[in-house]
Image (cartoon, rainbow, N blue to C red; front, side, top):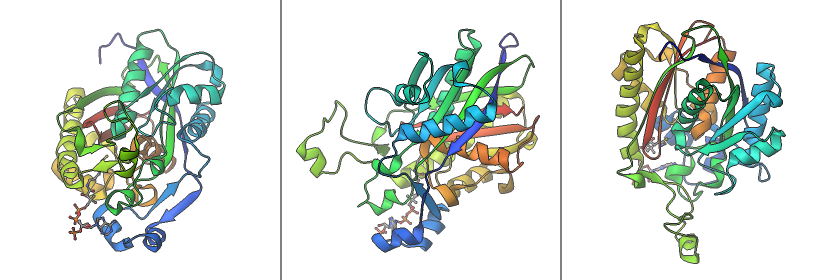
Length: 332
Ligand SMILES: CC(C)(COP(=O)(O)OP(=O)(O)OC[C@H]1O[C@@H](n2cnc3c(N)ncnc32)[C@H](O)[C@@H]1OP(=O)(O)O)[C@@H](O)C(=O)NCCC(=O)NCCS
Protein backbone atom coordinates (compact mmCIF):
# COMPACT_ATOMS: atom_id res chain seq x y z
CA UNK A 1 0.00 0.00 0.00
CA UNK A 2 1.55 3.38 -0.97
CA UNK A 3 3.09 5.21 2.01
CA UNK A 4 1.00 8.37 1.45
CA UNK A 5 -2.25 6.49 2.13
CA UNK A 6 -3.44 6.77 5.74
CA UNK A 7 -3.80 3.49 7.61
CA UNK A 8 -7.35 2.16 7.94
CA UNK A 9 -8.03 0.10 11.06
CA UNK A 10 -10.84 -1.95 12.52
CA UNK A 11 -11.91 0.15 15.49
CA UNK A 12 -14.73 -2.10 16.63
CA UNK A 13 -16.35 -5.45 15.89
CA UNK A 14 -19.80 -6.86 16.61
CA UNK A 15 -21.90 -9.86 15.70
CA UNK A 16 -25.46 -11.02 15.92
CA UNK A 17 -26.45 -14.67 15.90
CA UNK A 18 -30.18 -15.47 15.88
CA UNK A 19 -31.42 -17.24 18.97
CA UNK A 20 -32.75 -20.42 17.33
CA UNK A 21 -30.08 -23.13 17.25
CA UNK A 22 -30.80 -26.01 14.87
CA UNK A 23 -28.58 -29.07 15.13
CA UNK A 24 -27.96 -31.71 12.47
CA UNK A 25 -30.02 -34.08 14.59
CA UNK A 26 -32.89 -31.58 14.53
CA UNK A 27 -32.70 -31.55 10.71
CA UNK A 28 -32.63 -35.34 10.57
CA UNK A 29 -36.08 -35.30 12.22
CA UNK A 30 -37.56 -33.40 9.28
CA UNK A 31 -35.54 -34.56 6.26
CA UNK A 32 -33.60 -37.55 4.98
CA UNK A 33 -30.17 -36.73 6.42
CA UNK A 34 -27.95 -37.62 9.36
CA UNK A 35 -25.58 -35.85 11.71
CA UNK A 36 -22.89 -38.25 10.51
CA UNK A 37 -23.34 -37.31 6.80
CA UNK A 38 -23.30 -33.58 7.43
CA UNK A 39 -20.51 -33.60 10.00
CA UNK A 40 -18.07 -35.84 8.15
CA UNK A 41 -18.48 -34.05 4.81
CA UNK A 42 -18.60 -30.47 6.06
CA UNK A 43 -17.69 -30.11 9.74
CA UNK A 44 -21.09 -28.52 10.42
CA UNK A 45 -22.83 -29.51 13.66
CA UNK A 46 -25.46 -26.77 14.01
CA UNK A 47 -26.58 -23.48 12.56
CA UNK A 48 -28.58 -20.48 13.79
CA UNK A 49 -31.84 -19.71 12.00
CA UNK A 50 -33.53 -16.32 12.17
CA UNK A 51 -37.13 -15.93 13.28
CA UNK A 52 -39.81 -15.36 10.65
CA UNK A 53 -40.07 -11.65 11.47
CA UNK A 54 -36.28 -11.14 11.62
CA UNK A 55 -34.99 -9.90 8.28
CA UNK A 56 -31.44 -9.65 6.98
CA UNK A 57 -31.51 -5.93 7.81
CA UNK A 58 -32.46 -6.71 11.43
CA UNK A 59 -29.49 -9.06 11.80
CA UNK A 60 -27.20 -6.48 10.20
CA UNK A 61 -28.55 -3.65 12.34
CA UNK A 62 -27.92 -5.59 15.57
CA UNK A 63 -24.37 -6.51 14.51
CA UNK A 64 -23.71 -2.87 13.54
CA UNK A 65 -24.99 -1.62 16.91
CA UNK A 66 -22.70 -4.09 18.67
CA UNK A 67 -19.73 -2.95 16.54
CA UNK A 68 -20.46 0.72 17.31
CA UNK A 69 -20.60 -0.05 21.06
CA UNK A 70 -17.36 -2.01 20.80
CA UNK A 71 -15.68 0.89 18.99
CA UNK A 72 -17.06 3.41 21.49
CA UNK A 73 -18.41 5.29 18.47
CA UNK A 74 -21.75 6.97 17.95
CA UNK A 75 -23.85 6.39 14.82
CA UNK A 76 -23.49 10.12 14.11
CA UNK A 77 -19.77 9.58 13.44
CA UNK A 78 -20.52 7.13 10.59
CA UNK A 79 -20.57 8.54 7.08
CA UNK A 80 -20.38 5.38 4.99
CA UNK A 81 -22.39 2.14 5.30
CA UNK A 82 -21.60 -0.83 3.09
CA UNK A 83 -23.55 -4.08 3.41
CA UNK A 84 -22.36 -7.35 1.92
CA UNK A 85 -25.25 -9.74 1.42
CA UNK A 86 -26.75 -12.23 -1.02
CA UNK A 87 -30.04 -12.42 0.87
CA UNK A 88 -31.19 -8.80 0.67
CA UNK A 89 -34.49 -7.86 2.29
CA UNK A 90 -35.68 -6.88 -1.20
CA UNK A 91 -34.09 -6.59 -4.65
CA UNK A 92 -34.24 -2.87 -4.06
CA UNK A 93 -33.80 -0.62 -2.19
CA UNK A 94 -30.48 -1.84 -0.90
CA UNK A 95 -30.28 -3.51 2.51
CA UNK A 96 -27.70 -0.82 3.38
CA UNK A 97 -30.42 1.82 2.98
CA UNK A 98 -32.81 -0.19 5.15
CA UNK A 99 -30.10 -0.56 7.82
CA UNK A 100 -29.24 3.15 7.57
CA UNK A 101 -32.87 3.86 8.41
CA UNK A 102 -33.03 1.34 11.25
CA UNK A 103 -29.82 2.65 12.78
CA UNK A 104 -31.08 6.23 12.56
CA UNK A 105 -27.86 7.20 10.78
CA UNK A 106 -27.38 10.56 9.11
CA UNK A 107 -28.13 10.76 5.35
CA UNK A 108 -24.79 9.20 4.51
CA UNK A 109 -23.51 7.08 1.61
CA UNK A 110 -25.05 3.60 1.86
CA UNK A 111 -24.97 0.74 -0.64
CA UNK A 112 -24.84 -3.04 -0.95
CA UNK A 113 -22.15 -5.21 -2.42
CA UNK A 114 -23.14 -8.47 -4.06
CA UNK A 115 -20.19 -10.81 -4.03
CA UNK A 116 -21.87 -13.67 -2.14
CA UNK A 117 -19.56 -15.32 0.40
CA UNK A 118 -16.64 -13.06 -0.65
CA UNK A 119 -18.83 -10.02 -0.04
CA UNK A 120 -17.35 -8.98 3.28
CA UNK A 121 -13.84 -8.80 1.78
CA UNK A 122 -15.14 -6.82 -1.21
CA UNK A 123 -16.91 -4.43 1.19
CA UNK A 124 -13.89 -4.10 3.47
CA UNK A 125 -11.61 -3.19 0.57
CA UNK A 126 -14.13 -0.74 -0.92
CA UNK A 127 -14.60 1.00 2.43
CA UNK A 128 -10.83 1.09 3.05
CA UNK A 129 -10.21 2.83 -0.28
CA UNK A 130 -13.07 5.27 0.21
CA UNK A 131 -11.74 6.21 3.64
CA UNK A 132 -8.29 6.71 2.16
CA UNK A 133 -9.77 9.02 -0.49
CA UNK A 134 -10.26 11.56 2.28
CA UNK A 135 -13.99 11.98 1.66
CA UNK A 136 -15.11 9.80 4.56
CA UNK A 137 -14.18 9.60 8.22
CA UNK A 138 -15.62 6.38 9.62
CA UNK A 139 -17.39 3.47 7.92
CA UNK A 140 -19.64 0.62 8.97
CA UNK A 141 -18.95 -2.56 7.02
CA UNK A 142 -21.59 -5.22 7.58
CA UNK A 143 -21.97 -8.81 6.39
CA UNK A 144 -25.55 -9.98 6.99
CA UNK A 145 -27.45 -13.00 5.72
CA UNK A 146 -30.78 -14.67 6.21
CA UNK A 147 -29.83 -17.64 4.06
CA UNK A 148 -32.72 -19.71 5.44
CA UNK A 149 -35.17 -17.75 3.28
CA UNK A 150 -33.33 -18.42 0.00
CA UNK A 151 -32.63 -22.11 0.63
CA UNK A 152 -34.68 -24.90 -0.89
CA UNK A 153 -35.64 -26.87 2.20
CA UNK A 154 -36.56 -29.77 -0.10
CA UNK A 155 -32.96 -29.99 -1.37
CA UNK A 156 -30.97 -31.76 1.35
CA UNK A 157 -27.72 -31.29 -0.61
CA UNK A 158 -27.77 -27.52 -0.02
CA UNK A 159 -30.13 -26.60 2.84
CA UNK A 160 -28.06 -28.36 5.51
CA UNK A 161 -24.98 -26.28 4.67
CA UNK A 162 -26.03 -22.71 5.44
CA UNK A 163 -27.03 -20.60 8.43
CA UNK A 164 -28.16 -17.08 9.31
CA UNK A 165 -26.15 -14.38 11.07
CA UNK A 166 -24.38 -11.05 10.83
CA UNK A 167 -21.05 -9.47 11.64
CA UNK A 168 -19.96 -5.86 11.39
CA UNK A 169 -16.97 -3.63 11.91
CA UNK A 170 -16.35 0.07 12.35
CA UNK A 171 -13.47 1.22 10.18
CA UNK A 172 -11.53 4.38 10.94
CA UNK A 173 -8.25 6.03 10.03
CA UNK A 174 -5.08 5.88 12.07
CA UNK A 175 -1.94 8.05 12.09
CA UNK A 176 0.20 4.97 12.73
CA UNK A 177 1.74 3.93 9.40
CA UNK A 178 1.64 0.33 8.11
CA UNK A 179 -1.11 -0.90 10.39
CA UNK A 180 -4.71 -2.08 9.93
CA UNK A 181 -5.79 -3.28 6.48
CA UNK A 182 -2.42 -3.81 4.77
CA UNK A 183 -3.16 -5.54 1.47
CA UNK A 184 -6.07 -7.05 -0.39
CA UNK A 185 -6.59 -8.99 -3.61
CA UNK A 186 -10.10 -9.53 -5.01
CA UNK A 187 -10.88 -11.72 -8.01
CA UNK A 188 -13.91 -12.75 -10.08
CA UNK A 189 -14.63 -15.22 -12.85
CA UNK A 190 -18.14 -15.02 -14.25
CA UNK A 191 -17.71 -17.65 -16.93
CA UNK A 192 -19.77 -20.25 -14.99
CA UNK A 193 -22.39 -18.38 -12.92
CA UNK A 194 -24.57 -21.50 -12.76
CA UNK A 195 -22.15 -23.18 -10.33
CA UNK A 196 -23.84 -21.28 -7.52
CA UNK A 197 -26.84 -19.12 -8.29
CA UNK A 198 -30.52 -18.33 -7.87
CA UNK A 199 -32.00 -18.83 -11.35
CA UNK A 200 -35.16 -16.73 -11.13
CA UNK A 201 -36.44 -13.48 -9.67
CA UNK A 202 -34.16 -11.16 -11.64
CA UNK A 203 -34.79 -9.69 -15.08
CA UNK A 204 -33.32 -12.73 -16.86
CA UNK A 205 -36.11 -14.90 -15.47
CA UNK A 206 -38.79 -12.80 -13.80
CA UNK A 207 -40.99 -14.43 -11.19
CA UNK A 208 -43.82 -16.42 -12.72
CA UNK A 209 -45.95 -19.39 -11.81
CA UNK A 210 -43.52 -21.57 -13.79
CA UNK A 211 -40.45 -20.32 -11.92
CA UNK A 212 -42.19 -20.87 -8.61
CA UNK A 213 -43.31 -24.38 -9.59
CA UNK A 214 -39.74 -25.16 -10.67
CA UNK A 215 -38.42 -23.88 -7.29
CA UNK A 216 -36.11 -21.48 -9.12
CA UNK A 217 -36.23 -18.80 -6.43
CA UNK A 218 -33.88 -20.79 -4.24
CA UNK A 219 -30.12 -21.24 -4.16
CA UNK A 220 -28.75 -23.88 -6.54
CA UNK A 221 -25.24 -25.24 -6.33
CA UNK A 222 -22.85 -27.67 -7.98
CA UNK A 223 -21.14 -28.65 -4.73
CA UNK A 224 -18.40 -30.86 -6.13
CA UNK A 225 -17.20 -28.26 -8.66
CA UNK A 226 -17.34 -25.42 -6.11
CA UNK A 227 -15.29 -27.54 -3.72
CA UNK A 228 -12.46 -27.93 -6.26
CA UNK A 229 -12.23 -24.27 -7.24
CA UNK A 230 -12.52 -23.11 -3.64
CA UNK A 231 -9.53 -25.14 -2.54
CA UNK A 232 -7.44 -24.00 -5.50
CA UNK A 233 -8.37 -20.31 -5.59
CA UNK A 234 -8.69 -19.50 -1.89
CA UNK A 235 -5.28 -21.03 -1.10
CA UNK A 236 -3.60 -19.28 -4.03
CA UNK A 237 -5.02 -15.83 -3.36
CA UNK A 238 -4.03 -16.13 0.31
CA UNK A 239 -0.43 -16.84 -0.68
CA UNK A 240 -0.54 -14.08 -3.32
CA UNK A 241 -1.65 -11.42 -0.84
CA UNK A 242 1.08 -12.47 1.59
CA UNK A 243 3.69 -12.24 -1.16
CA UNK A 244 2.38 -8.81 -2.18
CA UNK A 245 2.76 -7.63 1.43
CA UNK A 246 6.16 -9.29 1.90
CA UNK A 247 4.85 -11.30 4.86
CA UNK A 248 5.48 -15.06 5.18
CA UNK A 249 2.76 -17.54 6.23
CA UNK A 250 4.81 -18.21 9.41
CA UNK A 251 4.41 -14.55 10.39
CA UNK A 252 0.59 -14.81 10.34
CA UNK A 253 -0.89 -15.39 13.81
CA UNK A 254 -4.33 -16.46 12.63
CA UNK A 255 -5.92 -17.45 9.33
CA UNK A 256 -9.62 -16.67 9.07
CA UNK A 257 -11.07 -18.46 6.07
CA UNK A 258 -14.67 -18.31 4.88
CA UNK A 259 -16.49 -21.08 6.76
CA UNK A 260 -18.05 -23.18 4.00
CA UNK A 261 -16.62 -26.61 4.66
CA UNK A 262 -13.91 -27.73 7.06
CA UNK A 263 -12.53 -30.08 4.41
CA UNK A 264 -12.02 -27.12 2.07
CA UNK A 265 -10.13 -25.35 4.86
CA UNK A 266 -8.03 -28.46 5.56
CA UNK A 267 -7.08 -28.77 1.89
CA UNK A 268 -6.26 -25.06 1.78
CA UNK A 269 -4.04 -25.39 4.87
CA UNK A 270 -2.27 -28.35 3.31
CA UNK A 271 -1.64 -26.48 0.05
CA UNK A 272 -0.32 -23.48 1.98
CA UNK A 273 1.73 -25.74 4.30
CA UNK A 274 0.25 -24.01 7.32
CA UNK A 275 -0.77 -26.08 10.39
CA UNK A 276 -4.52 -26.35 10.93
CA UNK A 277 -4.28 -24.97 14.45
CA UNK A 278 -3.55 -21.56 12.91
CA UNK A 279 -6.98 -21.59 11.23
CA UNK A 280 -10.06 -20.28 13.04
CA UNK A 281 -12.90 -22.78 12.67
CA UNK A 282 -16.43 -22.11 13.91
CA UNK A 283 -18.42 -23.77 11.12
CA UNK A 284 -19.40 -26.49 13.60
CA UNK A 285 -21.68 -23.95 15.35
CA UNK A 286 -22.82 -21.64 12.53
CA UNK A 287 -22.68 -23.49 9.20
CA UNK A 288 -21.98 -21.31 6.19
CA UNK A 289 -23.30 -17.82 6.89
CA UNK A 290 -22.00 -16.48 3.55
CA UNK A 291 -20.98 -12.81 3.80
CA UNK A 292 -21.35 -12.91 7.60
CA UNK A 293 -18.94 -15.79 8.07
CA UNK A 294 -15.66 -13.84 8.11
CA UNK A 295 -16.70 -11.02 10.46
CA UNK A 296 -18.27 -13.56 12.87
CA UNK A 297 -15.06 -15.65 12.81
CA UNK A 298 -12.88 -12.54 13.18
CA UNK A 299 -14.91 -11.43 16.19
CA UNK A 300 -14.58 -14.86 17.82
CA UNK A 301 -10.84 -14.93 17.11
CA UNK A 302 -10.41 -11.63 18.92
CA UNK A 303 -12.72 -12.57 21.80
CA UNK A 304 -10.86 -15.81 22.42
CA UNK A 305 -7.48 -14.02 22.46
CA UNK A 306 -6.25 -15.68 19.29
CA UNK A 307 -5.39 -12.32 17.79
CA UNK A 308 -3.64 -9.52 19.63
CA UNK A 309 -2.43 -6.04 18.70
CA UNK A 310 0.51 -6.27 16.30
CA UNK A 311 -0.49 -9.71 14.95
CA UNK A 312 -0.87 -10.39 11.26
CA UNK A 313 -4.32 -11.81 10.46
CA UNK A 314 -5.23 -13.22 7.07
CA UNK A 315 -8.83 -13.28 5.83
CA UNK A 316 -9.70 -15.40 2.77
CA UNK A 317 -12.99 -16.12 1.02
CA UNK A 318 -14.66 -17.55 -2.07
CA UNK A 319 -18.23 -17.65 -3.24
CA UNK A 320 -20.78 -17.32 -6.00
CA UNK A 321 -19.77 -15.34 -9.04
CA UNK A 322 -17.37 -16.95 -8.78
CA UNK A 323 -15.61 -14.48 -6.54
CA UNK A 324 -12.68 -14.91 -4.21
CA UNK A 325 -10.11 -12.84 -2.38
CA UNK A 326 -7.85 -12.33 0.61
CA UNK A 327 -7.01 -9.45 2.95
CA UNK A 328 -4.04 -9.08 5.24
CA UNK A 329 -4.53 -7.10 8.43
CA UNK A 330 -2.09 -5.95 11.07
CA UNK A 331 -4.27 -6.01 14.16
CA UNK A 332 -4.43 -2.90 16.32
C1 LIG B 1 -21.96 -30.32 -0.80
C2 LIG B 1 -20.86 -31.26 -0.36
C3 LIG B 1 -20.80 -31.28 1.15
C4 LIG B 1 -21.19 -32.66 -0.85
O1 LIG B 1 -20.18 -33.52 -0.44
P1 LIG B 1 -19.69 -34.64 -1.45
O2 LIG B 1 -18.57 -35.34 -0.77
O3 LIG B 1 -19.42 -33.99 -2.77
O4 LIG B 1 -20.94 -35.54 -1.55
P2 LIG B 1 -20.93 -37.05 -1.91
O5 LIG B 1 -20.62 -37.19 -3.36
O6 LIG B 1 -20.09 -37.85 -0.99
O7 LIG B 1 -22.41 -37.44 -1.58
C5 LIG B 1 -23.41 -37.23 -2.46
C6 LIG B 1 -24.50 -38.20 -2.03
O8 LIG B 1 -24.97 -37.80 -0.75
C7 LIG B 1 -26.38 -37.55 -0.84
N1 LIG B 1 -26.67 -36.39 -0.01
C8 LIG B 1 -26.65 -35.10 -0.37
N2 LIG B 1 -26.99 -34.34 0.67
C9 LIG B 1 -27.21 -35.17 1.71
C10 LIG B 1 -27.61 -34.96 3.03
N3 LIG B 1 -27.81 -33.74 3.54
N4 LIG B 1 -27.75 -36.04 3.82
C11 LIG B 1 -27.54 -37.28 3.37
N5 LIG B 1 -27.18 -37.54 2.09
C12 LIG B 1 -27.01 -36.49 1.27
C13 LIG B 1 -26.63 -37.29 -2.30
O9 LIG B 1 -27.95 -37.59 -2.62
C14 LIG B 1 -25.66 -38.23 -2.96
O10 LIG B 1 -26.22 -39.52 -2.94
P3 LIG B 1 -26.00 -40.53 -4.17
O11 LIG B 1 -24.53 -40.75 -4.26
O12 LIG B 1 -26.77 -41.73 -3.73
O13 LIG B 1 -26.56 -39.82 -5.35
C15 LIG B 1 -19.50 -30.82 -0.94
O14 LIG B 1 -19.47 -31.03 -2.32
C16 LIG B 1 -19.18 -29.38 -0.65
O15 LIG B 1 -19.08 -28.96 0.47
N6 LIG B 1 -18.96 -28.58 -1.70
C17 LIG B 1 -18.66 -27.17 -1.55
C18 LIG B 1 -19.94 -26.43 -1.34
C19 LIG B 1 -19.71 -25.07 -0.76
O16 LIG B 1 -18.82 -24.85 0.00
N7 LIG B 1 -20.56 -24.14 -1.13
C20 LIG B 1 -20.55 -22.82 -0.62
C21 LIG B 1 -19.65 -21.96 -1.43
S1 LIG B 1 -19.44 -20.42 -0.66
